[in-house]
Amino acid sequence: MRMRKSGFTLIELLVVIAIIAVLIALLVPAVQKVREAAARAQCQNNLKQIGLGLHNYHDTFKVLPPGGISDIPPWGAGGGWGSSWMVFVLPYIEQNALYSKWDFKNANSGYVNANNRALTNQLVINIYKCPSGNLPVIMGSNNMTSDYACIAGAVNGLIPGYNETRVAGCNAGGLCGAGGAMYGNSKQNLLSISDGTSNTILVAEVSAGIKDSSNNPIVESGTTCYRPGGPYGWPMGTGSNTTGTTGDRLFNSTTVRYGVGVLTGYSAGSGGINSDSSQNYPIGSNHTGGANCVLGDGSVRFLTSSISLDQLARAATRDDGQVVNLD
Figure 1 (tube, rainbow, N blue to C red):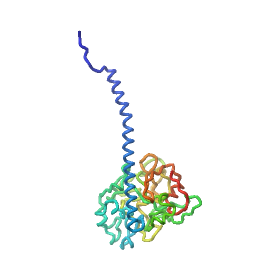
Figure 2: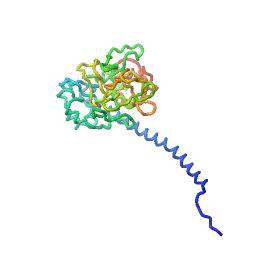
Figure 3: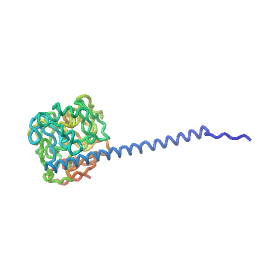
């Protein structure tokens, strides 16, 4: 008797290939979901560390760090374009070696200062970067651009029955507020957040790119950077030497004007979207359904895109006396 040779027939082989293809098709989305879940968790951890850093700064100086400064007392003496809140929190996020070399004595500590520019050249601080961010990390200034911004406040007219007077037009376009807990040359402590620290946003994600009304990306390249940090990166503060709102830009900050995840319908140079600060850059991310933030009590919250604009404005304002619902 002949022995039958073992092996697959053509039909059996095709069936096996089809089954493998189906399994791969089912597996790929699952892997992508796992990766995104890990990226979202890492982003939340970044903000948790930033929140702890803000609280440790507050414990030391009895105020929250300013959203950004010109180098004036008590932060420096040189004037000019000073540093952002992210510089002041460095010692509290395990970056004390960098902070100890920072020059506040001479003008323009945030970017123009040669000493500080050399320190930050091509330097990436991972805690300031969301793993899901899809925008360039290093811009034309050779400085890292952060995926997080402090919340300076909200524009007027968003909260029904409340008149927000602490808003001024920026000379580069947009509206810059001072109703939040961290704004230009601010010295707010946690007690001044009368709406409650668990109801007030300190820092939020700005890690997603914006698009025009035709759904085309507003491109970032070279020295052009439509982000709160502008082309100068995370160290840049403000050029104004007064507290609150002025005509000068406040970098690495945003004043709420648009809803969470509203990333389409903009035009470069208008509506607070500018290549040299973007005062009203929308809170948003590449996480599905919203963006992360850290509240005044140090807790991390996921802001869904379904949150109404008036509720977002209330959470951006420290003392409007309104009930906040971020669910």
